[in-house]
Amino acid sequence: MPVVRSRRRTAALVSALAALGLASAAPQAPAQDVVDITAWFARAAAERGVGLARKTQPVDARPARPGEIVVTMIKGQGKETQSPPAAAGDWVVRNRCPETGNEEILVRAATFAARYDGPIGGPIGAADAEGWLPYRPRGNPMRFVTVADGDGAFRFTAPWGEAMIARPGDLIVQNPDNAKDTYRVARAAFACTYEVINEPRR
Image 1 (cartoon, rainbow, N blue to C red):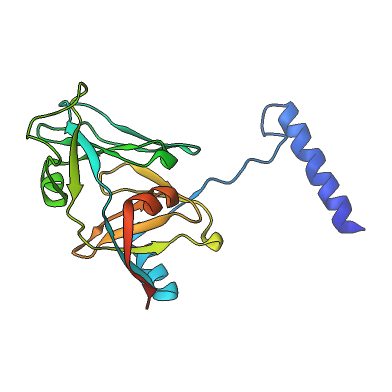
Image 2: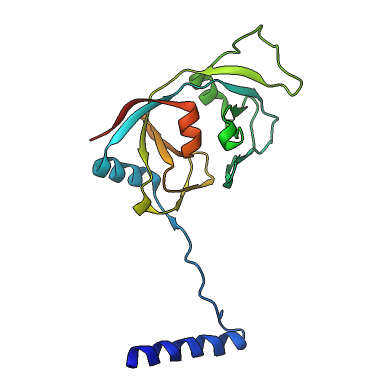
């Protein structure tokens, strides 16, 4: 059978090259695709519809230290992304979502003022020992699509310039007023922090 012999010869050649240090004996896993997330969102929305949701779960926030880098960790998945160095006036926001490990993100000063109200539930300045204060999302509507199984996992550049990985079941959310403001929200984080206004529709 020529196909079988060809495969055997290929395997033997790869093994020989590996022994010489010219190739790996084991096939390497392909790198995850890198996509233009705004183009991906537009295509996915056209194919399967787009929904509308708003963040409603209160968060904890504290002023970021200038130069601070925030690494966002999702429980059970590891690193989601990391922020660029914080500037004066930026904030660290911590989601109240035990399912994802109460992940933290860096939010720029102007974005924080536009998206959150507070502090709530007590006098202004009543922070805990670590400086966290409770804030309420303003509930600005965000467009969303779900990453389907057929999409597989892929990488893209988040609005803050760092890489993010999206996996099937995750949500890609987008600011209706700014298509460049498109990013990933882990499925569990979306379930515990967002309220769906409209289910996906074309």
